[in-house]
Image (cartoon, rainbow, N blue to C red; front, side, top):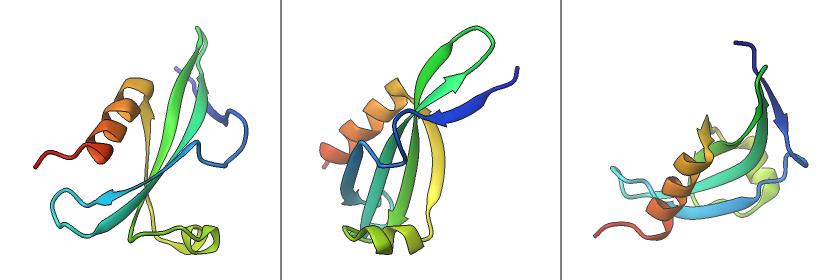
Length: 89
């Protein structure tokens, strides 16, 4: 099935989260950007999730940072936000 990813409004993230790498314990920054995935049957909301090591607040630094990128469903993105904002101790 063919899909295309389209940024809903722009490439500006709807959420910027700072947390700790779950295994290594160092600071990590996430950007979540809403996407609309178009398939033959429907448009589904998904999120482009980018993760970079470090506490990054500067947009120029973010642009140059090495990032891991994935696409998550709304439910998966919500679970990620909960995990980052309410880490288990």
